[in-house]
Structure formats: C-alpha cells, structure tokens
Image 1: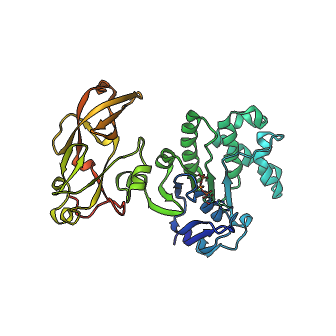
Image 2 (image 1 turned 90 degrees about the horizontal axis):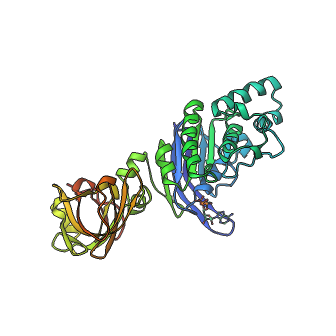
Image 3 (image 1 turned 120 degrees about the vertical axis):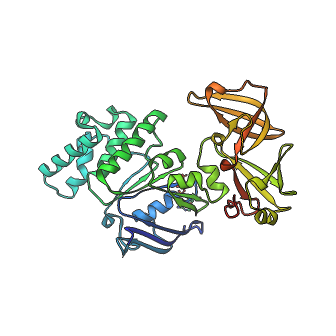
Length: 364
Ligand code: ATP
C-alpha cells in the first residue's frame, strides 16, 4: 500500500477556477517526488492540498491508507519549507530551529540535542548564535530546512525553496537537499518550475500543465521517453527542436530536405499518417556534426554560436527552420558557414501533429 495516495483530486477555487484536474498519484514511503511545470500549472495548489492548507474540492487523499481530506494541517505530521524562508529575524539560528519544539513543550535538553544534531547535518554548527540577517541566502535556506527537519516528521513538502538563491548557491543546495533526504529519509514532495532541479533531485517527476498531469516517471523516462510534445519540450535544456510537416509519399520535409520516414517507422504506421501532420523532434545534444551512418543528414546555416565551456550551442537555420545543436566546443563551426549535421535514427522523436502524443507504436 502506498504511503500517500491521491485519487481523482480536483481543486476548484471559490471563484470557479478549476486549478487541478483529476490528479492521481501513489507515493511510496521515503520517495523524493518533484512536481514540475510552468507557472500556474497547479503545482503549489496540489502541494497545499497535501499540506491541508487548501481544501480538496473532490477526490480522496490518504496518508498511510487513512483518509486525510478532513485532517487539519497540524495533525498531518507534515513539515513545509516555502520560497520565502520566513525566519524570525530577532531570533538566533538556534532559537529559530528550537522554536517549534519549545512550543510543543519538549524538554530543553532534548531540544538542545536535536538542534545540535540538525545543525551538524546542515553544516550550521558555527552559526547557531547568529541572527538571520548575518547569514547568506544559502545559510538562511538551510536554517529553514533545519527548522522543518528537526521535527522528524514523515512528510516533507518544499515549494520552490531555492528560488531566492543565486545560480551557484542553487547548485550547492540542490545536492545538500538530496543529501539531507538520504540521511533523514522523509517522504519528500518538492515543487519547482526548474527542470534541472527536477532531473537532478527526483526519484520520480510529476510533470504538469494547465492543472493536468502530463507524465509521471523517473528522470530517465521523462527525458528519453516523453509521452507528448509538452514533456519533450519542457525537459532538457536547450529544449528539443520541433519541426512540423505533412507526410507525403512517406516523407516529411525539413526546410528543403526530404526525410524518408521508412528509416524509422514501420510501413503500416507510416501509411496511416499519409497526408497528415507529423512533428519531428530532436534534442540539441542528440545531433552529430557531419554526415553519419543510420541518420537523417541535413544542411544548415550557422547563425550564432555560444561557447558554454563544456559544449557550444549552435543556432542554425535549415532553409527557414530554426534549430539549436549542441556540439563539442573544439568542433564549434564558424558563424555564417553552411554545415552538414546528422540526427541518428535512435535520437529521432516523432509526434502526432494533431494530438501531440509521441508516436511509439510502429517505431523501428
Ligand atoms: P507558480 O510556479 O507560479 O507558483 P503553480 O504551478 O504553483 O505556479 P498554482 O499556484 O498552483 O500554480 O496556481 C494554479 C492556478 O490556480 C493559477 O492559474 C492560479 O492563478 C490559480 N489560483 C491560485 N490560487 C487561487 C485562488 N485562491 N483563487 C483562484 N485561483 C487561484
């Protein structure tokens, strides 16, 4: 039996806005789940329903097999970390972490042991006497995390906890949170719009759009086996390139080039798409320079190159179709030149032009 179970969960706000539609998810004890999706897709609303801060319009939420819809937030044994750390500015780091336990009437020596242990896990031992204003953003964030994990609750909810940090701090905190999760083992639900956070931290990702779950799966599944164009375009940076074309004579066109889809699709599937729209998808990093075997080969004009250090983003124009390729920085082509590049068949994604679902059956 799953530890947390969300069955047919919907949220309709009092103004009639339907923010979450038929949300179904089973979460095992100790899992690290990330809700990801663009702004307004319903991530926070779902998290707040799990926290008990927002009532569930319909559907059933169970904790450990027991219906929890009507249980108040305090009784849910849940700790939450928000985007704004909400530390008490006049209290030391020690008191900020101890406060919740003091309110519960826990003995001072027990509190002291817990604060010291939590501070050690989070690398805050040297800062316990400081006030929040004398800490960096990352350190404040760690205090906020400390205040949540000190309660040893079973469920840990985090809503964009890293969004106030700079890029470097985010990378550090990302691995720290993963590390804390490993040490503490609490079931964690983490909300972000940042696909890199989702990919690097999650056991499983829940990708959402417009209040609907698009796909639930491991980071590997979402990256390599996206179910539709939305997930394919959301996961990966720079995003997957898409080219829409009508299928004619078993071929699609990219700029002036014709690609024979017999190389990647079985004959009967291909025949069923004749005259219909199909979308070719390929990831910037799924391409190779030059003419390779077992690949679609295309000509393109190099419009711009961006050296990033570990690779170069090459912005190309394929007879009017704009795309991005990711290449080894040592192979960066010169701007304003014409290049050949290859998309190995195994890196080709095809989507139904109407439904935007991936074409999986009938792939060679
Ligand atoms: P973000 O990343 O911007 O926080 P999100 O995915 O967390 O976005 P939610 O905050 O869950 O999105 O909001 C989902 C939708 O519900 C949005 O369109 C939002 O405007 C709407 N919404 C949120 N709160 C209310 C409310 N109290 N009343 C009506 N609509 C609301």
